[in-house]
Image (cartoon, rainbow over all chains, first blue to last red):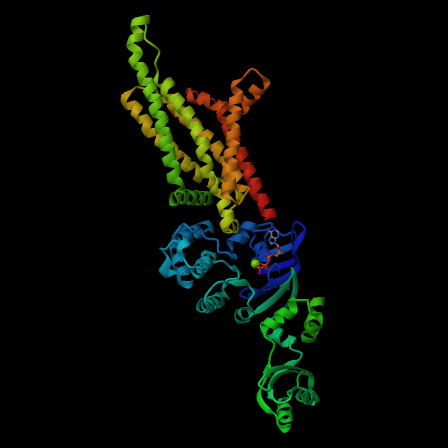
Length: 329
Length: 259
Ligand SMILES: Nc1ncnc2c1ncn2[C@@H]1O[C@H](COP(=O)(O)OP(=O)(O)OP(=O)(O)O)[C@@H](O)[C@H]1O
Ligand SMILES: [Mg+2]
């Protein structure tokens, strides 16, 4: 449905996106992840025909965005970072204008407005002035505008930014329900969001692809070591030494918590579950074991590890395989 | 065609949703009313002097509503539009760029030209509505006088064409910035320059004067005001409008490449 080959986009001297390759199958939801300035918005603008690519071939819904932009635009719905709304219009006028300009026939217009308003839960505000709506509602109207012509491809730039938690969940559910009929590509900074909604995640940084996989695989691949968190009541130095001697332990770091308690972060070797040994070692030494639990790398940590290069050593420990794979990909 | 109409309607509606339309129409009605009143009262004073004139020279003074009222009114009209058109055109592109709605237009299946024509038409309708107000005043003349309607029609046609030129350049200047105020002041400055060129053209005979008179938008309006519809003048205006819209298209396209 979407096919991007060697996309490069430069603004004057700055290269926003460099040699990006990816494709999205029909009915799939692709998550686009990256820190500020990674090039997410730029890529989406090229996909929707708002900006021409500097280099590369971009095909959406079977049409080249450069050769047949109108065909692409007819089949694409786009929600930019700031919803493109006329603040002086009423919501229904806004939707009617969007529908007309996107080529919805006069006969169907009314029905399409009703349908999208219901889907995006703005039916109660159809007669309000767009400029008087809250940010969350504007976001939903923006989504309705993107959906009005029932496009094959939906491009959503940070669709849940600025929404309250309830609306975030509703929007995610809506986006999920749209997949299948629509092919969706959405960008976000928030990792759980990608994990919840997307079938596949692409992480980009500084305009380049860093990693691409399902959220589950991405997590699994990155967890070469598992980390245990222990809180012990006992002497810090002795305990650290004792823990390090337990079979399967890679490294130990300690953080005193006061009241004679110490928090330990214990790196385990891959595939070993030494929780029992750890517990026994603590108890047999006569210290109090207050807490023992595994800490998986959260997506946030993975994200940071993949996209920041400040501490290459740590990134290497956390993601030895994936960074190599990404480099060769 | 449907796209052009959709956009034109949107523009026209948004003029009336904001105070702009009311300000433009209101200011126009007041200024035009003032000119109308002063020109007409001068004319009336002269009619009163008619009798005296007859006694002194034995022949009636040459008095003509068309020449003495309608023509100067129409000439004043073009000066008023010079000042009001920037208010109409400044928002056309600048506002859309600022609020990001340009992204909606440019990712919709609409060509740049359709978008430009649509915006031009929307602004043109407001301008035409403005001229429409003056028809009310002119109808008064028909009630109390007996003007010839042909020069009137020609005069209005000329005004529409002249307004189209102003609008197309206003549109161009709105497309080069995202700041309405900048667009408005630029347009106003350019129009003021045109007016200055007009003055220079009064010293005809000199090279400068001839060139200025050729370039001047308002010299071409004189024929229309006299009731003469000359193809040459019409073609001149239509080409200026075309040039403005063409340059706007270039500007919009370059925005696409740079933005
Ligand atoms: N119009 C522009 N002119 C020049 N440079 C630009 C322009 N738009 C974006 N850039 C640059 O291109 C790079 C990518 O920007 P982009 O907006 O695509 O990032 P993003 O991933 O969407 O970031 P964010 O998460 O903050 O939305 C940035 O370095 C930005 O400064
Ligand atoms: Mg962005």
